Image (cartoon, rainbow, N blue to C red; front, side):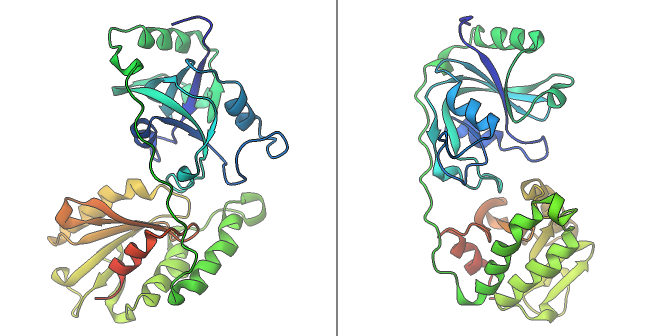
Length: 311
């Protein structure tokens, strides 16, 4: 590694809310908050954003971490870019970007105390981490350093006109989501039971589900939807696993699928924090088939609402 090149670390979330795969797959490093728009001197006073936008140089080295695990080593391949297509990365606005050639570590490297000493993005000073970066960059695996950068995803079109039956609920989300994220003004964020009451059930009712077809805490499952009565495992049509607002719903998929196995009914599942909804289809080996964020609706959200309507 050329000693003129600096070494940085960037977080891809905690080990329980990691978006490292997305950064590696698209060849990017991202930080937020990005909703205020592209970085400029009169718009941001966040020192981390300023440093990310102005101090990194092409060919600098990046360590990509989730918690205290290093998931990839990369070489910076571009100057600062504002990438609006990354306005909803696991619910976070991370539009400040750099293109990066990543080398994925299939055996993530753990360094004790890394998460405690590192912010979401910072310059590496630790001798241990500098030595590790130097070793990784100078390893015999070199093809990744010059490979073409992957294509970026297309920017999704925002949903300008909301379905009539959802307008009141979406307005409520837009009014309150900022407050939920402000612990000083609001206090502790709402628990999953509160999100079920205030958002999930109202959404299901708006999509045509009668109360008798909606079961709460049925067989220890947060929400079950039955396509017909009686409420038996074979009539379970959707299984919904709820989390507190802002939690990683992505990590709830395995738990939800586990419930279908215990019911011996491999129905489709939805994981949600009341604001964001991910749907996984049983017939597609529980691949994700639809997504909606009530606080940031896109055209593709309509597919989730269509699928989730009472048949």
